[in-house]
Image (cartoon, rainbow, N blue to C red; front, side, top):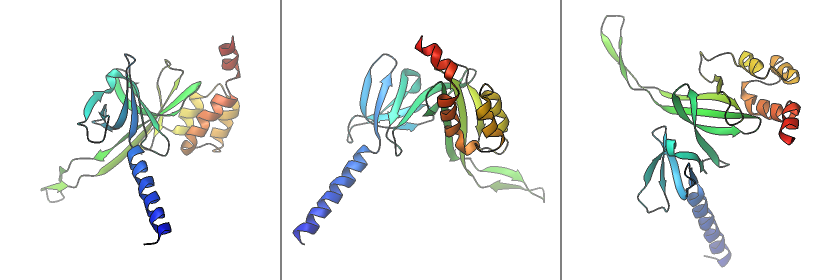
Length: 209
């Protein structure tokens, strides 16, 4: 093998190894101020499985004890927090936008269990389990404001245009863009960015005092 080709092969191998090593790199921030750096992934809906090094035995930490978990599981690191999406009911959500208004997404994926259903002949038949991918959007003003469900990708979710128009009612310019469909549900991050940058003059003045 030529020296040049060997060098290219080594570089590719090293680059691939670094990419693999960094894929689930994470930092856990605990409520008591402690931090752990290593590798992690979300498990069981409200826990994170963590290990400092690749060969270590993993440990599980519940989000009740975490301020946030930052995991390199996408093109950009994701920040996960524990949020009370309904009164008394908490979920792990991913931060999408942070500002005067914060935007979060709750992602739930998996397979529903097979079940028996009645057939036309009166017999009970076993149905196949189905894969589901549910995404719910939530917004909150600041770090302690009320959580509002803005919509989801489910068939029977609330009307996004009406919900967004009501939530951002103090910004007429944004409402116009939502009502004329310049901004749709797929542009929700742009909607929140627009509000935080263009519709919050009164909030900025208060913050600067």
